[in-house]
Each structure stands twice: as C-alpha cells, then as structure tokens.
Length: 486
Picture 1: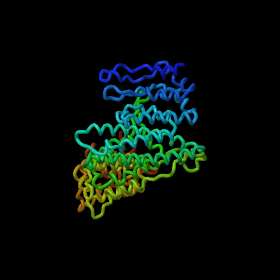
Picture 2: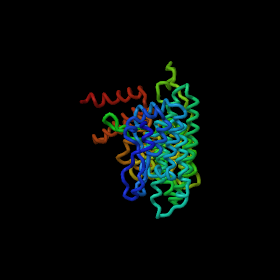
Picture 3: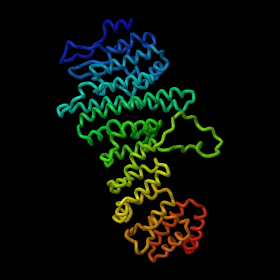
Picture 4: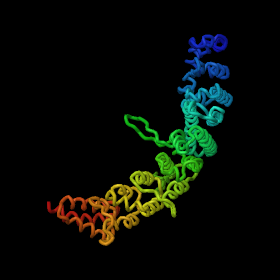
C-alpha cells in the first residue's frame, strides 16, 4: 500500500521559482526511514522508486537526494552483502542511471556520495561504475577547450575523483583477499580488473588534461596533482587523540604501483621533466610502494614459524630505479645534474626504499658528479652530510669516500671541511687501527670544545661500526683518560 501511494501520489520537491510547474517527486519520509525493510519486501519496486526520486533539477542546477539508509548504515550493508544476484544488478542499474543523468551531470558536479556507495557494491559493480564514469571524458564536451570554459577543469577533476575512489576501494579488497588462501582466484580477478582500470584511468585522463592545458609541463603537473597524488599519497588520519599517517591503499598491493609506473613511464619520466619537484615527489612515492620489504619475524632464518599466507605476486623496483635514478645519475657524455640541497634531500628520501646494492650505486654516481666536490667545499659539507648516514650505509664504501676529505694528503687538500670536520670524521671506519689512531690523536687539542667534538666523533664512529670489540677498545681508551680524572 505505501509503495503504491508513493508511485501514484508521490510527495513533491519544494516550489521552484524558475520553473514552478516543474516539481520533481521525492521519497516519502516513511519509506526513507525504513528503506531496508522495503528492500526486503520488494527490492525491484523500491529501486525503481529511488531512480525517480534520487535527483532533481532546480533552475539550471542538478541536486541529489539519495537516502543515507540505502548505503550508510549497518543494516543496509548487510542487505547488499547477503542479497542475491538480481538485487546486485538492481543496485548496479540504479547507480548507472544516476551516472547517466544528463550525460554525467551529477558526477561532474561531484554530487554522488561515492565513498559510501562503493562500500555496498560488489567488486564487479564497482568495476562497471568506474568504466561508465571514465567514458564521460570522451564526450564532445572535453574534446575542445578554451579559456572561456575554464570550469571544465573542475568538472573533469570530479570525474577522476570518482574513478580514483573506486580504484582505491578495489585495492582495499584485493589486499584483503591476498591474505586468505581460499581466495586466490578472487585476488587474481581483482588484480586483473585493477590493471585494466589503471590503464584506462591514466590514458584517458592524460589525453583530456593535455587538451585542456596545452603546455607539456603544466599537463604533467596537473596529471600528478589530480591523478597520481590521490593514488600514491599517504593519508593523515586523526585517531585516538593523535594524527596517524597511513600509507596509500595501493601500497598494500605493490604490483599495482609497478603497473602505474608502466603506464606513466613514457609520459612524465623524461630528462625534461626529471628536474621538476612534482616528478621527484612521484618518484619518491613509487619507490616507497615498490621497496623490498619483509620486516616481520618470519623473515628471520630458522625461526620455526609458519609464514603468513600471501597471494601478492612478486614485484621489484628495478625498472623504476633504472628509469628514475640510474638514468638520472649515470649519464655518460651527457649533461650531469647539479647537486644541491634539494637533490641530496631527494636521494636521502629514496634511501630506505632501495636495496643495499642500489644505495651503493647511487653513492658512487653522486661521488662522481663534478658538483659533489664543489658542494662540499661550498658549505663545509653540511649539505652532503645526510647522504653519509642515510644513503651510504656500506661501511667500506663510506670510508673510501670520506677518508680523503677527513685526513687528506697535505698536497691534495683542495676541500676544507672547517668546523664540520669532526662530523665527517665520525663516518670513517674505526675498525682500522691506523684510522683509530688518527681519530684519537685529534682528541688532544688544547681547546676543550675541540676535544669534545672529536671525542663525540670517536663515539659515533664506534657506534656505526656495530662491533662489541670496537666498543671495548673505545671504552678502554676513554674511561681511564677522562672519567678517572674527575
């Protein structure tokens, strides 16, 4: 009876002064409050009613009036989780009808509640919705562009925001499936679906952005801001009274990061763009996602524990490293980068995401740059110091690099580290007896401040050696000489 009344004599939206005769039907509050019950009773009629009452026009603006009880409470999610295939198709048709309103007007105005929407949809439905939305940039509206239509940029951003929210939702699902040994087929299915969606997202979004921006650098910058940042950027979440940084959802399934790189490699990772800050940020995020990882207790040898199941396919960062790091530094017969504080900070951020061999290669390439020695002499090595600890983790390589600057030949002393000399000296290999002797010799300087700096260098060099025997030697030298005197 109630559904019949809604279909026959529906309540109307408030009066529209522009078009007073155009009063769209709206959902009765009785149905909205008990929507899940009506879905259980007759889902087909209820969805048909929602299709006619979930949006309306006022003047020239389109508005959405979707009851939250359809997707934003526990009962609704339970219904859509346990419903049969016919109801799944009904929900899919409902959302597709909203996407298709006036050629995607609701999506372009960012009016649809996509975050809650995707939580109630099956994976196949989310896939269909994203593909339907990514058809919108292919319409005539976005094929031409002029300064008089600047508002189209925000409309395109809304379309891409919808698609990226769906991809993030599917990435959450594939990471959950990958931890269960009885859902391997689901993991593979989600993975294939996401690869297709990421390919579609990158190709279509860049094509339209290129038309809108017309300038290569501006196009790549906007592509990074609108597409790559939401996919790859960490999220700050306020929880339990403090702000917690959560990695991007893509990071829970690293092969997706590898696929993203394959799609954008030829677009933005060129020598022309590598100098730009937004490209450096993208490199840092991709390398962090693709970093080798196994920090759990199960990675320890002979731990006699059963490793946790994982259906995540193998991945590596070799392609990203070669394109974004090696080709940038190992440039024979080509113009070298000019090392400065920005570049050193960039490579230090990359350091935790690299393998030991990759870090050694980067250090060798940096040390070979003509600007490396010039930078050390310019500010007494202050800018280069972070590289010594974060990037140069190989003790032997670090010693070979630093020793000529700390204890050089008097004839070859072309770089003066000045007051920063003890800081650099802390990174030499104190395990070598002759080097230990040179360090301890510097602690007999007349000034107490100078002696204190070199004592600190001896202690830090001992800590970096990670050797108990070296600590014993240092304490046997330090305690009688200083502690006993007091």
